[in-house]
Image 1 (cartoon, one colour):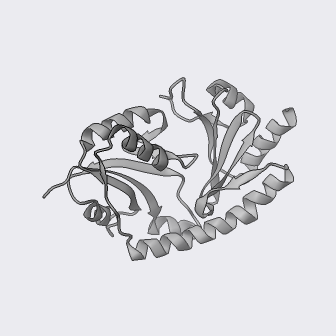
Image 2 (cartoon, rainbow, N blue to C red):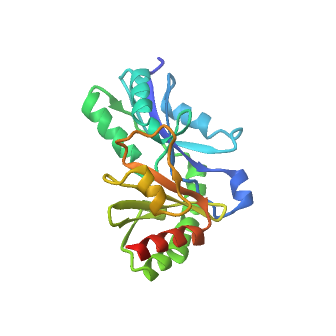
Length: 235
C-alpha cells in the first residue's frame, strides 16, 4: 500500500566531488520532500548510482497529510530556501526544529525508522573523519588565537561560537573552502552585513523576524577570519 510520507534528507557523499577534493564535505543543506513510496525505497532511489550526489534520509513520518505539512514547512522556512526543496541549515538545527513542529502540531504522525546504506555510510564516515581533522587543524587554532570560545558541532562538521549579540557557525568545508553563517535575535541584516566584511544576505526572501541574517559563503578560511578579526578589533 502506498504511504503518504514526509522526509528530511541531506547530501552525504559525491564521487564526483571527491575526485576534485578527497577531503571535501557538503555544506549544511537539508532536503524536505514527500513520497508515496516507503522511505527506505525512496532513500535507495536517492542513493542510486545514477545520481552524482548521494542523499540520505535523516527522518521520515507517515500517517499524516504529508503534502500539507510539506507546504507549511516550505513556507515557514522560505527565508532559508536555496532552491526548490533544499534549505540552508547553517546552525544545524533544522532536523530538530522540524521534529518539534511535527510533534507539536501533528501528533498523529508516525515516525518511520530508516536503515542506513552500508556503502554510503562507510564513505560518509571516512569523509567526515578527514573533515573533522581539518576542523581541529585549520579552524580551531585560529579561534584560539583570537581567544574565541567555541563548541564543536556533532561529528566535527563545524564549530559554533558567539560574538557579542551574534551567533556564528563555521563549517561546510568543500574544495578547501568554508562557509560562515551569521545570525542574531537583535541585529538586523543590514547591521550584520556592515559588521562582517565580505558577508552576503542569507536570503533575498528573508523575513524581518528571521534570526538568520547573513553568511560568507564558500570562502578561503583566511578571508573568513579576516572578517571575524576586524569585527573583534572594532569592539
